[in-house]
Length: 545
Image (cartoon, rainbow, N blue to C red):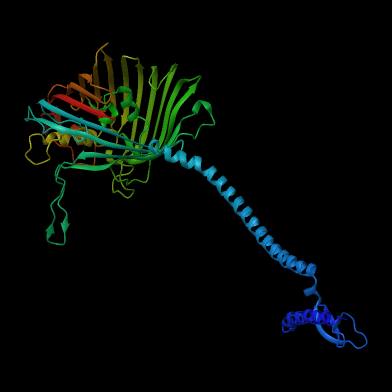
């Protein structure tokens, strides 16, 4: 071998040794890796991969450092491991994203199911409430004043010898609040503004002090109506569809119905309301029309209530029952269309506590059983209406009804104190019988905003009394001007006529109706026995929205 070749080989081996020596210093990292052993012939300087004669071990080199494919495989393995790790992370992310997508889909489905009802509730929120108002006001002037029942709420005149008394009044001021939370369910709340009268008894505070009463005639507020109504209770029976059940302080089944039938509540009271039956009771009732082929043939109402009305505290251990049935033999296209026949029945007791001390069974009127009946024949046409009503009652008209508007003083020396003695004997006992005949109607003058109306009543407060001085007629006549759909005015005359001839009544005769209760039969003559007539002119106003 030439010397030049030897030096070249030696240089190559030196370079390899220098490079591989560096690798050798990290020998630990190649543990377990296949090694390539190199041998050198000192004499010739040749390097061999196998041992032989005269050859010495030069070094050991990892086989992979001399194998490009092996290096590439290591890189690929490392890269593949990283890719596998990334792929696993990606799969985990894809799974999480799929789960999130499904969760979002479920949530979207739930929101989609909720949203229409929620959106409908919000969009129709204004339709779930209705606020209305009813306002009655009047100006009245009495040409003749006297004692009488109340003409409208908290309306009174100062009694005889006060002719030309006149007054501006607010007799009713309602705000009607209606809430319709769901289809078929209604809540109504109606506060009533009324005028208090009288000072009452000054309450005693401690042993030596009293406070002055604040019942000074101010306008006060009390509850008139507050009830829940459901109108789908009978929807399973087509003829009864729309009938309602109501509970709370409700408009009873008769008085509000007749007020709507007559149509002039802002002017005067319908008969039984005038005689003492309230329009609002606390209790529960059902009612509505019975229809066939879109025509109404029956309209009914049935209720059970407190014996107290909406403005009194209930004291009794009994309850009051009312029913009304109206039949339209020819069929009615709306509530009061055409010919109708109506029967009303009411049975209850005086509003007194069960342990009230008295002669059983309920000797005098405030504690007696009370019965009212009304039979009506009525016809309603587009421009006119006519109502005939016969009323029959027991213990349903006491002195508190007769003198609810203006009453004679009980002060000794009053020239009219005898009225109280007589009325108490004739009316405040448990054996009174009432009878009343009534006629009501209206006629709308064609092509004008004016309607003529009238009411006439004849009441016998107690038919058991012969020629009862308290028998009276009531008549109201007037003309209404319908200004617009919300406002109407009426000019009318309202009158009470105690039509019996003036005379005297024996105190013994009065006492005969209440033996053993008041006193022994007296010998005096009660005079004058017939109350003074009352005549007045009114200008009534109604605003209803």
